[in-house]
Image (cartoon, rainbow, N blue to C red; front, side):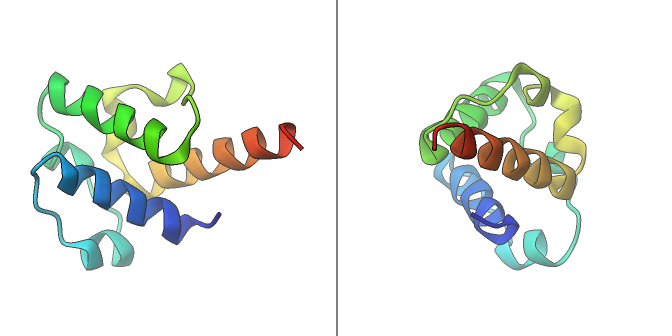
Length: 90
């Protein structure tokens, strides 16, 4: 898996929540995701959607509102954790 795939999954999950996002914006620049995920229900739904799409359980360290400040940082953290998790299962 690569970062571009993670970003696509992130934008798909957000759009599945009924929130419009410009996918090109997420791919071209670092986005403050708090502009899209504004309340606790959306926050929880976003992370559950990510876990479902990736078929992993994300660590508690990623499950914070502060993690949404940077889409680049969050996607890189999720990618790193995903790759570690999948390599451990081999």
